[in-house]
Length: 72
Image 1 (tube, helix red, strand yellow):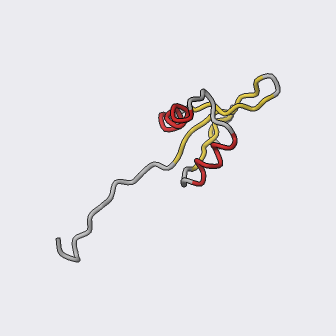
Image 2 (tube, one colour):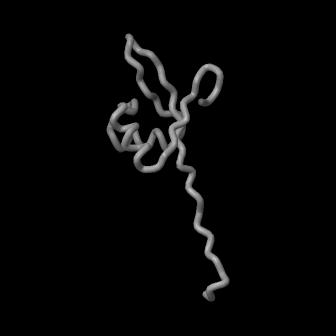
């Protein structure tokens, strides 16, 4: 490959979609998209703890929260 040829790398969608529900006075973060569900599977949980959200953000992911009006 010469210097003028550029290889294109696949772009990663660095976003996850979640829904926040209030359950018995606690706000729980539920996964919506497959990537968010994979994070839950990795953690062995059904919801994403706040501490894990901070780590996911540190990895470069953007968290999209679904609300009753749409995504925030």
